[in-house]
Amino acid sequence: MPQLRLALNQIDSCVGDLAQNAETILRWTRHSADQGAHLVAFPEMALTGYPVEDLALRPSFVEASRAALRTLAGRLADKGLGELPVVVGYLDRCEQDRPRYGRPAGAPQNAAAVLHRGTVALSFAKHHLPNYGVFDEFRYFVPGDTLPVVRLHGIDIALAICEDLWQDGGRVPATRSAGAGLLLSINASPYERDKDDTRLELVSKRAQEAGCATAYLAMIGAQDELVFDGDSIVVDKDGGVIARAPQFAEGCVLVDLDLPAAAPEPPAGVLDDGLRVDHLVLSADPLPAYPPESPGGQAERLVDLEEIYTALVVGLRAYVAKNGFRSVVVGLSGGIDSALVATIACDALGAAHVHAVAMPSRYSSEHSLTDAAELARRTGLAFRTVPIGPMFDAYMDSLGLTGLAEENLQSRLRGTTLMGISNQEGHLVLAPGNKSELACGYSTLYGDSVGGYGPIKDVYKSVVYELARWRNQAAADRGRTPPIPEHTLTKPPSAELRPGQVDTDSLPDYDVLDGILELYVDRDRGHADIVAQGYDAALVTRVLRMVDHAEYKRRQYPPGPKISAKGFGKDRRLPITNHWREGR
Image (cartoon, rainbow, N blue to C red):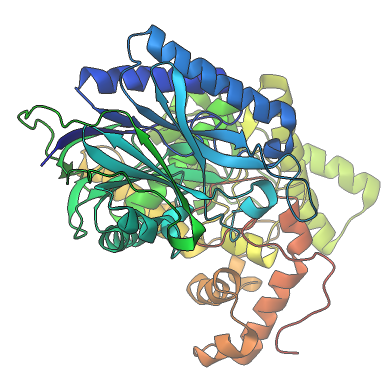
């Protein structure tokens, strides 16, 4: 059987940085060539970054992407890499598409190209366009209508982009009809919890449907609220794993494959779903036999909590770096949320780039101050104390606030303090709110919601505790000091805005609350369905009304990494003005 050494490059791209993204592609192509690769691939929209969102509707950006692709092809040839075919994702436009209602202006396309001998030898656009969750591709793109097949070293290789595998029909059955020996799919594939298991099942299933070995290449890094975890996979025609890449790690997956020889006559015509074969011959003859050096292998998988924690670290690190910040500041209360956020920040950026501020009021307990100071000592972050008592007294003398207004004033003074430090010293403020609190509106606008990024906004409170305990245990297993003080983990959570206050004064126990929220927020279950799961009807009514009433707060909360199937933001879009009430 003909042989092929395939190089799948898990790289991190930044949206809009065409020059730097091209440099990354050049660097990893050189690395792949040095490893003896015969075909090199990069992820979906690697040249432009992903997702480009409304930049796709800007003709100047589309043309810049097309020009950058042509320049990249020329530079590859100039550097002696022209004979090595390179598959790279970029933003294109459809030349033939006519403007009409219901189609994006300019007919942009989520596309990929095969670069060879200094030219764009073949290009194609994603056929299936996702339009759910965080994906808006019907808004941005027009679909492709071809099945691209490249004949390389006597092997026919069909090409696809991400959703072409996730949806039934289209390029997968067309690949079987075309008799291809390999299906190569380039993807962005944002991370969410347990998606790695779903991915493997999908790729194995599609390989069996396509009747050939299948390679699934994914992106790493993060962009705004999306995190990309890599986890590239190569399977044989029966779905058995040949190679699997590390999660959250940039690198090249190199694998030697024995693949069926291409048919004497190249595939042609119109196949499944009306796809027209676009066949390109780069080299018709198989390579001389060579000893395989990269038979594959599977990288060790991360356990569930380690996977989530790593996603939060990667998301924060990328957001800080890509937006030009060098450091962050967080209000350190001694509570579990700010403790976990500070620990994530230290792991993402290094303790030298993390600044924490304790801001005690008359209601702050002594143990909160000592717990905050102890975390700072354990992690080595920069720590200071700025009492808000004098500021609070000045406001109270002027306004005479009482009750909730008095409580919220303390939170807003802390937010103002953090923003003042941010403006003065250039740190990015981290908001410590978790998904349970955001769901129920248990936060203060312009107070604890202040910040440029919310590292745990998609993490339920019960999982916050699980992650904190996992991080402490991971440190202990390595012979290091656990970063989070034990007292922070065991004391009742409290905002400490009035004497003796604890979260359960206003909220159910978090284990119960999170169960209800997961059904309502993540799964869109109604009141009756949730009660049928065994929850008290009156409690469900109260929780759902808290969630509905807090929509205006969530709209004003900063971005943060998505780790669930449905995070607050583009995943879940509800009207602020909304009189529908479940269970009424």
